Image 1 (tube, rainbow, N blue to C red):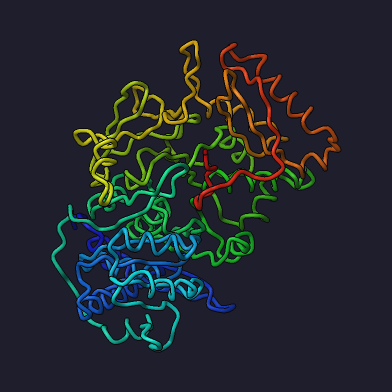
Image 2 (cartoon, rainbow, N blue to C red):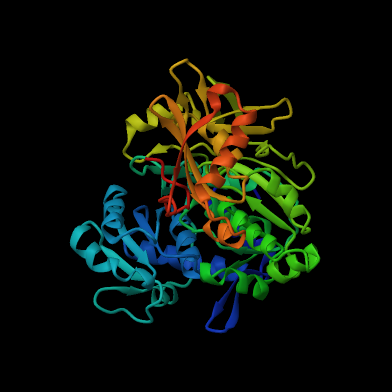
Amino acid sequence: MAINNLRDIVAYSAQNYGDQAAYRYKVKKELEDKSYNDVNADSMAVSRGLEALGMKGKHIALLGTTTYQWIISYFGVTCSASVAVPIDAQLPADAICDLLNRADVEMLVFDTIRADVVPAVKEKCPQIKYIVSMQAETEADGILAWKEFVENNRGDYETEIDPDQLCTILFTSGTTGVSKGVMLSHRNLADNATALDMKIPVGTVSMTVLPINHVYCLTMDIIKGMYIGATVCINDSIMRVAKNMKLFQPDMMLLVPLVIESIYSKLKAAGNLIPKRMLAKQVFGENLKTICSGGAYLDPSYVEKFAEYGITILQGYGMTECSPVICNNVEWDNRIGSVGKLLPNCEAKIVDDEIWVKGSSVMMGYYKMPEETAETLVDGWLKTGDLGYVDEDNFVYITGRKKNLIILANGENVSPEEIENQLVKADIVKEVIVREKGTVIQAEIFPDYEYAKKKFIRDIPAKLQEVIDAYNADAPVYKRVLDLVVRETEFEKNTSKKIKRH
């Protein structure tokens, strides 16, 4: 069947994978499976419930971590031709209310871990007509119970969905400036999830650990997972990732570089007493073979480092505005140093060293932000803000961010990321930001104090200066770092764990 919208994906998966487990998660200490037929039936019940409340076509927010209820609510909303607005569960209540108002949300479905938000919503979001608790057993204090909502609205549901109509508003976490509401259509998301055949076998077990309000997790773990017939295991806490990997025994995972780097530090700390592949099985479970990396830059050396442990890292690249994947490495065509080959539904061109992309996954625009939309979209081309190039085989290489570019007095352009990626290779460097300071280039470094302690490094600034001197020795004069600041605390980060540049 043709896949044009998210309802097509849910129907296709139920038709092809039926009683196979779509989602697996813990209920207390027991594992529970939900089949593809369950997903189809439960999401139709949510759609029917929305129509019964007069909420069909409205903007409906989802607030919480990854749960079966969240996933079903998302498909129930979008498959009823309504608009889903995933909200970052880590934000303070006032910021959440601001986003709900900016997105014209009229209904909120929330996880009880953020029950604190409800009084603020009642006070500051007068346009919200209904609030639904994902965990409550029965309706109370005007709060609807998700379980009753589903059970009371069982039955088949179909409605006309235009592939180009608004499906989801996703707020960018941003490292600078105010967050923008990215408008993604059904076609944007459906094409992104289905454009590239990664030859992942039906029944492959994955474990989802990234925040579900971010498009990388939403599209690749959830929507693509449904389309390819994966069994997606839901990690219930970032504190229990290691324990849950042993429990679920995943074949593959989607991770961000920060997590990959952290895992490697732990593998490396284990030393050479245990063979690397045996150690990997102890850490990741028996089956993990593939890690897909996205969300930020990953030093290519990690691809080779993890290969020693029997694990393939496939690096990709994208942005929320492109639903999100622009390019991806695959098992049989994995070019180290590249962020992958352009997806079949995407084309690219370079304009003043900046990567511009075009295709069916490029956003509709920013919600109620016409000026920002006009700045980012030019004749259907999305200005990514990333510097780089595309080779003759359509593999993409990233060299930095345009807005972070340092333009020196002599006219030379310096990408701070290029320098940061060199400096962070040193074990003593945990995090680094490179910027212009007066007339020179400055590196502000948060050292790995734990590493320094283990290696009995007493003069940390002197050790860091050695790292900088080693870099400077091979760098052109205009790219040399001439000022060092040593931090005692980590850099402030946004909720997707990217360092905020002020």
